[in-house]
Image 1 (cartoon, rainbow, N blue to C red):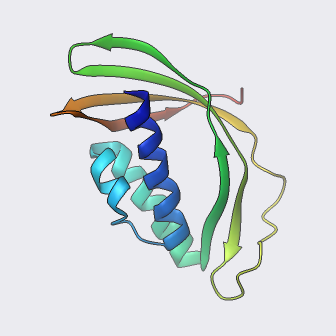
Image 2 (cartoon, rainbow, N blue to C red):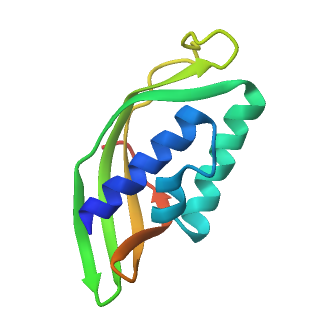
Length: 125
């Protein structure tokens, strides 16, 4: 299940880097509110002329598992996931680097695949 959770993040990063809400890993590993949230963030960056690229590191922990439902808590470090100008390709100075963030993810099993269906942000970790 954690493997599929990290594949979800591959999709999130691909969608942001390519400015494509139809990124295959995002389509496969995200659904419902979680997918809508990422699509909205990507579209906001497109409207602003931005894209994101870089490194996101994770410390995921399974906090609940019952049948086809699971919860993952992750302390993701997004400070090296940089915002760039789509016009120039250069980093955009938005302000201080984003901190680590604790987010709780709800996952549902769909066949042999775990899909992220909801994400709730918490405080910095």
